[in-house]
Image 1 (cartoon, rainbow, N blue to C red):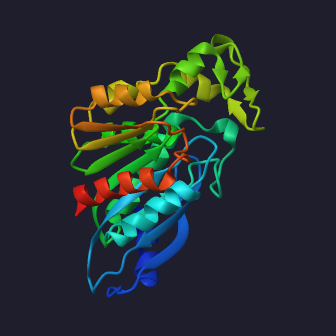
Image 2: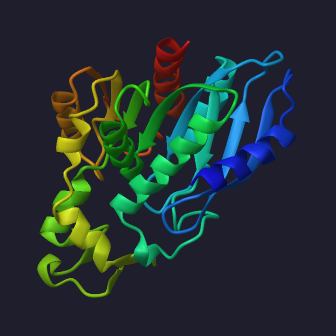
Length: 276
């Protein structure tokens, strides 16, 4: 791990001069749980030798680091003087791995590897996590494992703790199976192949127990009209995470498409307040 960090640092010391004065945007790879994670670092304008907080964005199931939600949040954070580090989880986007081998635990390993990279980056200040859907579960559990000394703040957007209940019911994204005798993989309507290990690990995943260990500030944002992950799952995170607040948005769906600028502004403004 030390060698990988040094290689990443060597790359970035060459890519970013000590006197960064204009907004910077670069793509690269970080070593994750099962291979390389496609990553993108965006930094605000900084004077020579400056530091800025970094927000790490964690996308959802079958998603990637792009899209209007994360693009909007990145734009607002950069305008507020905060850097953004995005990445594709294993088997997503341009990262290595096969989808049938993806699990929440190995996504947590990915997130921890990205946090470790951010900690070693010379211009990074405080580090925060923002996760959407399954990425919200990963962000909450990663924060619970690492604690507030490493993770300054957390935003959970429609956090999908329903994934454990889905596994127990034997139905994920419309595909049915016997959770206690799961096949090697389950073909989802989307065409993705959900692996047996995802199901087996989800059955006993200590989502709330791990999230509850995080004692730093948390904002939960959930749409009241979310039919993929009912807002009661967001309320449960609020109940168990001691320093959390929650915003339930009437009429909003899982992707926050009803009024995307509102959700983007809510998440970004809160992070700017906590990190600056």
